[in-house]
Every structure is written in C-alpha cells, then in structure tokens.
Image 1 (cartoon, rainbow, N blue to C red):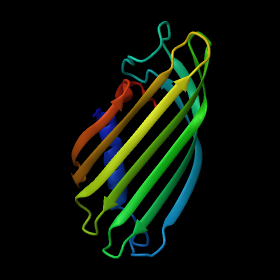
Image 2 (cartoon, helix red, strand yellow; image 1 turned 180 degrees about the vertical axis):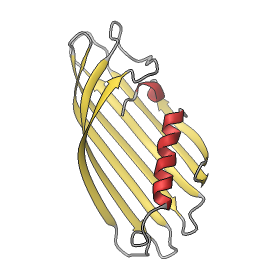
Image 3 (tube, one colour; image 1 turned 45 degrees about the horizontal axis):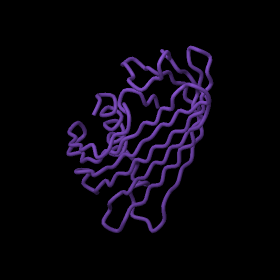
Length: 170
C-alpha cells in the first residue's frame, strides 16, 4: 500500500482515538453527519499513472463530494464507524477531451473501548469515461486491516483493479 494511503488511514485512526466522549457513549441509535464539498484533482498527481490513455499526459477536474458518516456505539462500548463518500463530475485532458467520472469509497472501522486493535475495511473505486477514441479508466481496490496502535498497521490487499494506487486521484 502506498505511503499516502497509509497516512490517510493513520489520520482516520488518530481522529477516532480523539473522538469526544459524547460520540463513544453507548447508544441504541446511530449518529449521522452529511457533508458536501468540492475537491480539485489532477492525474498524474506526482507519480506515473500507467492507466492514462495513449497521448494523454494530464487530466484535471473537480470532484463534487457527498460524504455520509454513521457512528454507533454498541452495549460493549465498541464504536462502529462507517464513512461513505461519493463524487461525480467532469474532467478535461491535455487534448481538451472531456471525461465524466464517478468515485466511491466505503471505509468501516470498529473501535473498541480500549482503542486498539481496530479492524477496518476500505473499498474504493474511480471510473473515468469519455466518448470517442480515448480509453476508459476503471480503478479500484479493497483493503482490510488492523490498527494495532496509532502508527502500527497490518493490511491485506484483497483486490486491485487497474493502477489504483498510482492513478486514483481522490
């Protein structure tokens, strides 16, 4: 797994450890938050992307995100956190070809009352499509793992589609 993906997981785990007591108080109901925001992106983003179509050196766009976070604490004090993110939009390459794209990410983690170990799963996909001669880019991965501490992760990549770790920009 690439360093920046591990860094994102480390930030998420660190944020979970710092959750306020009101979120980790056992409750029969779930707490849900929803957010909308925009994120600009460029492919490639600093590393070579093997899945760029021939003749395409760069693709840029803005992702319109919707993120829904659900947190529930069970009777044993285990926090069950699910984050579902989706994004849609258009992007343009260096040849002025316009693409549509969709992105989805599901992150789930179980955080016990004593904080560790935390078991998590990440499912991620990014699809870039266009009409005409430009090829389609379909990227994705599934990773499961355990956080043994704030900086100690064990992960297993279950599935990878395309050059997901170098081409998925968001």
